[in-house]
Image (cartoon, rainbow, N blue to C red; front, side, top):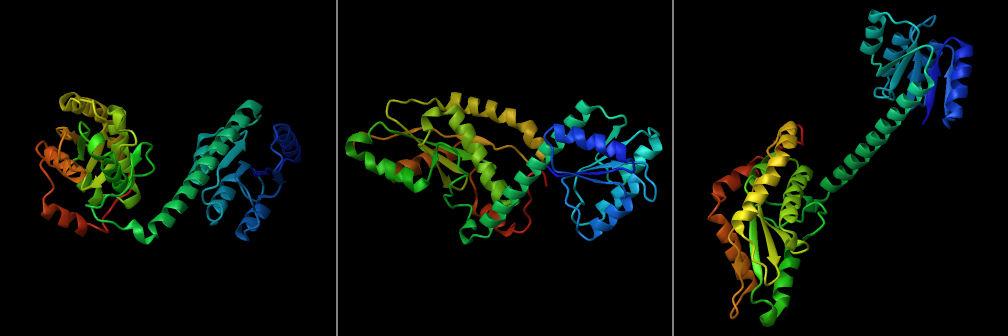
Length: 328
């Protein structure tokens, strides 16, 4: 982490540098002239991950230097910690108003300074991670295949235990006449999937589906690697023969799990995934058709849900361009 210290007291700078290097922080640059630092910053010649600025300096105060650094494009968000023996409330407010993030009093407590710098490191690490994720999201959004319809059977964000819909169909077909009888097909409907499709950014919509899949897999462990998103808000699970899921108990478990998420989603300003489970479909011993079983399971969940009228689907498509991000 690159640390830039600015103080007109050379003895303090020497002691501070010695302490920082003893802590293993070797990328330390010191300046005694705040005006010079401001000029270099304007020219883009100051590289820093965090600034330690004295509040009282001749020629330019620490608050003025802080404001000058904030005015540059390079250091508009760089952490700035003010260091001074001045405890006057008005001066502290001035520095914070100029853009300072924190304030330490002289003489410095080495433990406190080390703790503040460790916190800055964590903030910088999280900021870089967020920037990397944003870059990855933009790359994903730029791909042609990122555009899809509400009815499409997309694969949610890398949720462990969720498979591609075609792979699930192929699994059912591969069971054959001897393996298919007794197999259970169960449909879970995400009742507010249409709302999510119409109002969320595509990356957040994938996350919404993934969250719903996580709840299903948590409450229905037998669906691991046998659960797929079929489109239109429907998740289809294929359970091995012999399993007898109780839809009433499963629905109660889903509601309890969803209730635990409501507060977190309320803080984000969006509804939590709302799931309903349908009546299980058991493959007959003779004449079972894999695609027909899935269709029946999706029809049965419709009896406990209001369905998705075509008019609403058209309205959702027309809502493109008015989408919001989580917390937006």
